[in-house]
Image 1 (cartoon, rainbow, N blue to C red):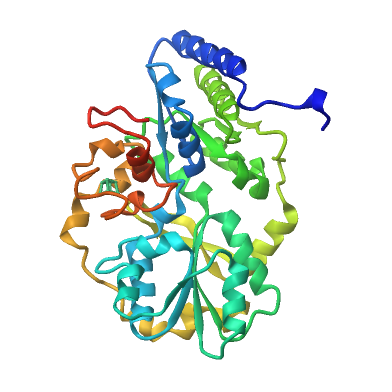
Image 2 (image 1 turned 45 degrees about the vertical axis):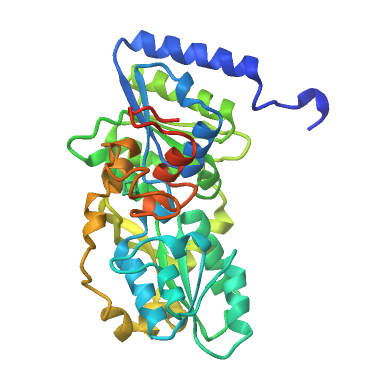
Length: 373
Ligand code: SF4
């Protein structure tokens, strides 16, 4: 791309023009419109650039189940904590240390002497296993994009002492559950452009057909988000239930077919619990039987079954993460927000990650009067 063709994704004049068109589109509807984006990176960008303050008053944009840390279920944390307490070496991504389980986080287990190390990639987890003889459990979390990286190490002669405890999840399945809720007011969905580079935008066609709601795939620059929302509002107003690619520089209908082949050679979809939301049919990714030698669920089956059924702590019962991620509430609706629950002392998972709606709201100035950043 030469200088003359350079596209400026934060151009103020273009942003204002899109804002004005968005205003007119919502006014043309003549009624409130409620949308949902399904990605923590979208929420980060909306907050960082102050976009929500520029949205039309009649436009509500909720964050859905788009933060992998937020939706990792307490029993999944419990399973990992249970292994760590039994002396099994755990490696996982940094945010996972702080996510509360039923009785402890991995960070608390580590403080009590458990061996829990942070890794920055699946490759690093494999390298740690190669450098020792003891079993190493990789607590593998994240959505389909991150699952591809886990698949890659399992397809590349993984060390026999590496065991994957998969908490990977498949986002389109959760969108279907949210859209199917009887009281859902969501009229359209903004999907994550980076995930769609892997899955392709075609992955949303079945959802649109079933739920009769438009999906617009958008990038993460301010102009990407504004233009994506504009297209989404236009489709809602016109009652056009289609998939729209508003991120053409990266996304194709088919996606990254090599990555998808690798993903589904290693994983298969299964039903799974998403924290605070529901049982999501086809929402989790588990290892296929041919990868049993590296499956922590099989290697440590007895130990993991001993962690099942732990009670929910009292403080977490007030947590409204589930209602927030299904578009029923905002972080400021939670009585613990900014008081008992803060980034340095998270009660719920949505306050842990920089992609969590409560953490983003806290750090970017969500106010007690209900105004989000
Ligand atoms: Fe849960 Fe904390 Fe968010 Fe409340 S503020 S919903 S306790 S994460």
